[in-house]
Length: 107
Length: 115
Image 1 (cartoon, each protein chain N blue to C red):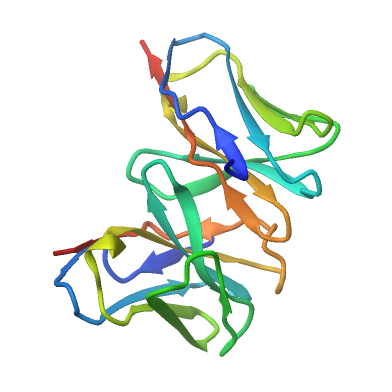
Image 2 (cartoon, chains in turn cyan, red):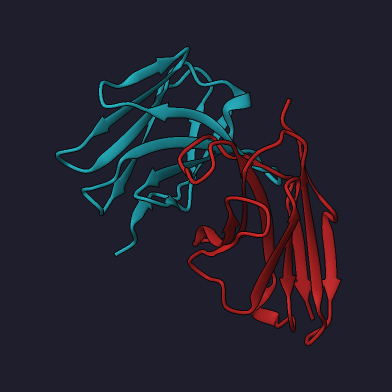
């Protein structure tokens, strides 16, 4: 079993839709959680950290469920510019990257 | 603005060649990392460094070595390139020496093809 698992997608959604990605992790002692965004043929960039209480940044909401060992990313009112691969990242003494979930937002 | 640069965007080498990938960061970061990214496997850590002349193995160090002679520069060396080392190589840096969970800033990547 992979330490961090994501559905690779692609998720194809129309503009304005709400879309959610989940990511599961296997190590219950994981300490920190992040979402990185990677545009096509570009480098990953930090999108947001995920806090125990959940956190929101504009149209993006990240949540952590320690009991079920997953984190989620919700994107509201999708824009064409949201098309990218979203990498789930878990810190367990070292950073473990998921393989990413690809989002395609269509006009 | 943090900037991480890598010496080449695309590189084609032959099996058995020695390959050098260079990475430079301009934000005085203590930590530097080398990853490779392959479809379906995500980013995997090859080596990292918390300080000058210091290096630690990541998850897949076999066939690679690194050098950090100056704080801003971290080099990845493929001693004898093989076809299974064809991949996208990403360098990253972050602050707070010894902590991997601080934000990592990535370079644009080097796509290496070994023939």
